Length: 613
Image 1 (cartoon, rainbow, N blue to C red):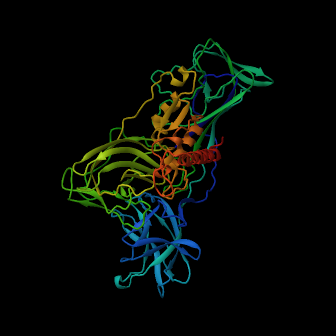
Image 2 (cartoon, rainbow, N blue to C red):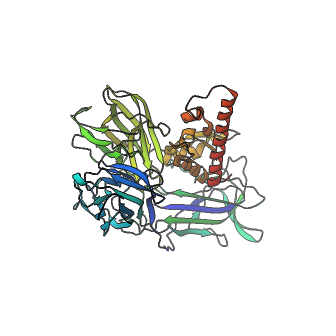
Image 3 (cartoon, one colour):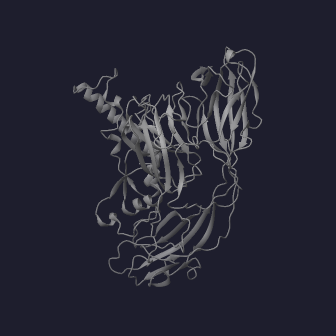
């Protein structure tokens, strides 16, 4: 993907057009491995791992350090495996862990990492590198290996395998310090496309825009370009699409030079692209000065994963209107997999069934759910493209006789969990269609899982009803174009704000936000329930971080009314230590005031530390 950075210094806002210049130089450097997942078991399994088979998993203290115990095993693969979406076809991974037999197991056994590349790969199963080791109960042994996941792999996974276990003498083992790494691409390289200090007339990368008078003048002993006789604050462009370069808008005056810089991604398929300097409303003709124009491009250095390791990878625009994923589960799960919550003492399952079907004779079913987060998902990396919007249609129902509730559609994009749809009042007696618009994050994902679950319940168990999924279709939406209208922010004398979710932080949606608004508020990610785990510990969420990063990158203010929103607060906010609802007594009012005060301080303190005051 090509990224351009335009930097210029000027005295008032101006408008000149840019052409592209052939790259001049490029250098690259080696980079360290990227940590895909690291888990020391100080809390339940991280999202990169899940249960394999039907053992009992439990966190134990081992010599003062937490570790995961795997017991009640009936198969050599009973234990843990990488979760859907953790591994990507075509990538290279190194995986390691410390492992030992449980204290009551005598003798020695063997343990290793095993890969499963799916039915399309040959071979499908095999040891991960030279990871097979003899283990005992007396000490920890490190097992490690490196594997290249083939391009033909479907739903690839790695699990811990052991020597065959006799069900009559099943044995337990302990595991700790799980780490997965992948070679990191070399850092991006920057190439100068145009560099002009106006010691000579305009360089080849720039040309006149519109009909002003351009001249080189001396400004405090330094040459600069003067633009006079202007009648437009923009260039004429016919049907071209205009988008402000994010982060480049700033106020300027005649008193001093101001540096303006911005970075943008040139979309695939752009024809005759150009950059120009746009100004605020032209209230009478005025002259401006510009100097030190610098245009650079940044290309990825390659060197990571299973690709060819060189050059840049252009963005794939896909095909609007194309059906990219479709299944009615008549031939099996078609790549859909179990999405496992962090609860380890229950083993949910995903399978096809003839018990219910909207069309045909089969559907997918999620059963034995121990938490609302147990669901069914599809690994979307390589199927749904970065920055592209898709339309989802799916049909869902709950099992007969089970509690009714709500279904959420969530996209786990690396660490952040991005809610795509919340559908209320699902039935246990009929099918209900779920429709959603899904905009993929602009950057390349290491892992991505689009999944269905029941409604999040603030860290509590929530609805665990069995549910069915059928007739899923995902179609690439028609490309959106932001109209060249007067920005709303230019029509009012006060900050103009909008509430957004991560889906508005990429693509045309992001262009619309940055064009019309100067201030953001989080639609949901900053409401109180998003900041606490099941243990009532304050835990910042990745969705809020995304919004803050987007605001910082685009010079937008953030209005923080969500942190004290009256709804979507944890139930315990309004309960005493015994779980009884707070009353209207002065003592209970003070408890609530103290909690609100501490919550505000925690939220404000966290974002002050990450993004400044």
